[in-house]
Amino acid sequence: MIDTFSTTELYLIASSFNAKGLYGLPDKKQFQLQGEKVFKEAHDRLIAKGFLTENGAFTNEGAFLVEVVWHYVVSKKYVQCNNLMFAFGEADADNVVMLIEMEEQTSYQVHLLEKPLALQLLTKEFAVMRREPLADEKEFLMKELPAEEAAYIEKLGIPNDCLILDIVHKADKPQTKASFWSWVVIIYEEKLIMFDLSKGSFHRTSQYYFMKMIFDAMDFPYRREEGA
Image (tube, rainbow, N blue to C red; front, side, top):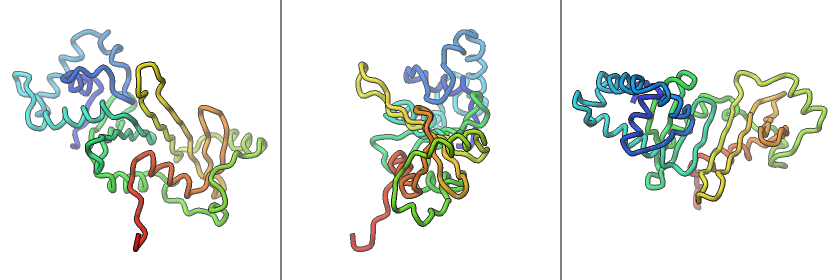
């Protein structure tokens, strides 16, 4: 799919199976407060794009879009890498649903992506994925930076080529809270630095450990050693 969808178009699609929200998108209530006009306009755009018929029924393309968005909504976890948002289906271990935020909180693309292609995309998009580990990075996983070095890096600010990594696990039960991890990942003087947004702490991280975090979060399969 290469079409771009507005927030209201995606909420209109999701309303076909009574979804209340979509991870990474603005709250649906702010559009409902604007009245029916914004959803009528979204309905007309979906007709023009070929996802709805004039009678409001889904076309074949529309039915496929509904299915993909449904898998996105029911996913038990989400991984967000800057403007790329990934969801996972329990019954489909080979693919991920990816929403790309094309314009902040305004327009999105929806993709069903094979996991090897998702890994290729992340590697292409983010320098931290392509980084070669330093010699000592087999000797540690993650270690907090000294206060002086952390303060200096904080003073430098966040570079444009950083990776903001969010990992969200939905609550298993209504009375439990969702689990959430958020990191800013940068390269500083050839070292991989991760800033824990929840704790406000800087950590030097092994490339091997960082890649394990990505593979585990994205459910990427590990390459088997020959003879294993």
